[in-house]
Image (cartoon, rainbow, N blue to C red):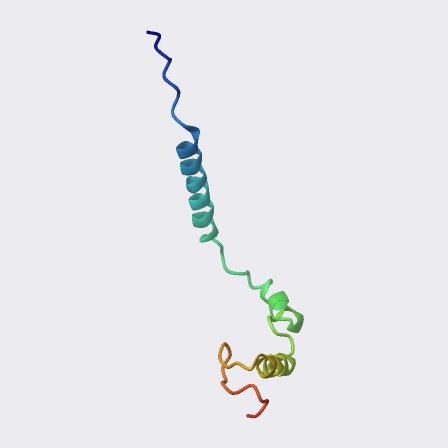
Length: 85
């Protein structure tokens, strides 16, 4: 009766553990971001850096979307799909 040599431990658990550890280290490192310096705040306050540069256009797009989808919710107002207010 021949005895087979024992195989080394599977690689998957070690790979998964090391990947999880690396992801956790990156996530914790992201929490250490410093706020913008005073000279950088001028760049961030420009109108073209806003999430919605034109609030009126964004509101119109939201109104059109909710009217076409015949749904309400997901925004600050509710209503039907007929386009009525």
